[in-house]
Image 1 (cartoon, rainbow, N blue to C red):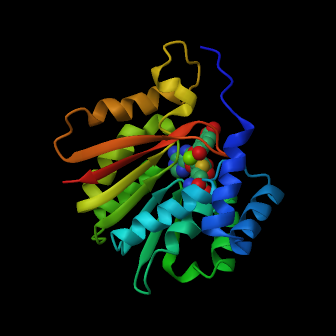
Image 2 (image 1 turned 60 degrees about the vertical axis):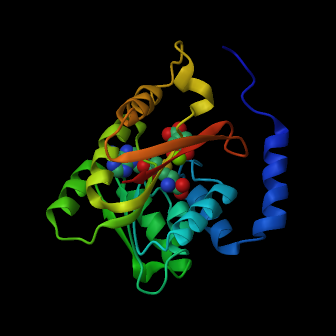
Image 3 (image 1 turned 45 degrees about the horizontal axis):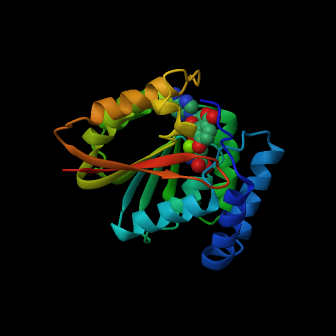
Length: 225
Ligand code: SAH
Ligand code: DHB
Ligand code: MG
C-alpha cells in the first residue's frame, strides 16, 4: 500500500476552519514558537483538534482532567481552558526538558494554577496516582507512547468515574492499523488498544478518522460505563 498520504487541501481546509471557527490565538502560537525554539518535535494536536478537546471536556463539565503525554503543553492549554475555577488538570510527561518548556507555556497561558505536571514514566505516575486518594477523573486524554496504549486504557478505566470520557490520539496512523505490511513501530500498540476494546466490559468506544494539517489519523472516543 503506497498511497500519497497527504493532500495540500487538507491543510488549506484546516486553515479555513481556523479562520472561521477559531481565529487567531496568540497564546497557542507562542506555545508552538517556544516548542520549536526548544527543539521539541512538532507533534502537538492541531488547532482544530485542540479546540475539539476543549469543547468535549466543556460539554461534560469536566472538573478533573488527566492527560498522558504533555510535550510542550499545547493540548494541556486547550484542555485547561475548558475548566471552571475549581477545575484541575494533571498531565504526565517522561522528558524533564519537555516538561520545563510546557510549564513556561502553561504559565504564559494563564493556566499555571490549575495544572500539575508529573515528570517520569507515565505508568509509574499512574500507579502513584492510583495509590493516592485523588478524586476520580472526568476526562482523560491519552497521547503518549503508543506501545503502552492498552496499559493506559486499563489505568484510565480505573482512575475515571462512571460516565468519564477517554480520548486517544493517533489511532489511525495513515491507515497503518489495517496494513499488514506496516513498519510503523507505533502500530502494534495501537492495535492492542483496539483489541482490548473488543467487547470491553466497562467501555463503549468509537473512532473517527481525520485528515488535516496532521495528515491522516484519528481520535478514539470512549465512555466508561
Ligand atoms: N499532547 C501533546 C503531544 C504529546 S506528544 C500535544 O498535543 O500538545 C507525546 C509525548 O509523550 C512526548 O512529549 C513524549 O515525551 C511523551 N512520552 C512518551 N513516552 C512516555 C512515557 N513512557 N511516559 C510519559 N510520557 C511519555
Ligand atoms: C507522533 C506522536 C503523536 O502523538 C502525534 O500526534 C503525531 C506523531 C509520533 O510519535 O510520531
Ligand atoms: Mg498525538
